[in-house]
Length: 284
Image (cartoon, rainbow, N blue to C red; front, top):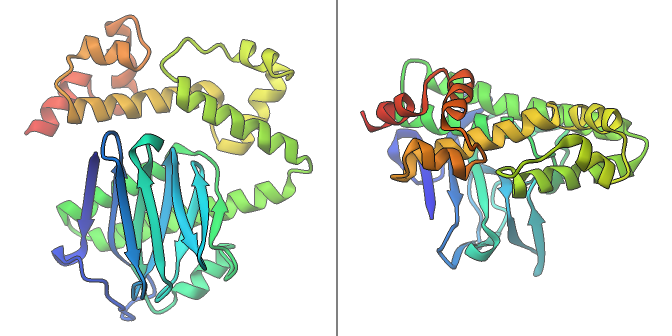
């Protein structure tokens, strides 16, 4: 299991703080590979809010005695003192990001971004930008550099803005089949990102024109299909560079590049560092 968590003032105790409109108190990520089960049970809930993003796999939540399976591309919002019971299973390859927050104006802020009081589990799309914001919050909370609490709030608000835009875009899409087709595509790309995916062939096999598919995919996710696949490859390459001893050639093959030199050029173009430089920076 991979985990990376961070806590305000290094305390895991949940707090209710009304000194500012919005305060991020903790955030983190879990990715289950081999651990069979990771359960959470808080019968009295917490004093703060919690937002969870299912980035991959699925999670099992329990609301009012009923189990609800929440798949990738969904978020779950818990409000203060709301009972929390959920599990992640290794066999589902669950990857989840979470953030806890409090403040004097949270309820109104959520409503202003379209997260109304009735929203508990909601689809938000499979956008890697969500993961980037969560990872940045984790890093800022761990390093505690100047003005980090303000940056934490900014990144959380950016997530809220992305959600608000998604809700508005979804409501404008007249044909629900469009959303369903794009959802299927994002799931397919996440499962087969390291294979030779040809967008025109994918569109043809699903009875779509290539131009129609690319246009609607970008409207729905914010990126073209190839940009989306590239982001998945780079993200997984980062994880392998951080957490394994595979060399660059091996990682290149794992994420879908036969030519390690080409992989290194692409990685440096996206991250600003070569794979070797990126790994050396982490070790330092």
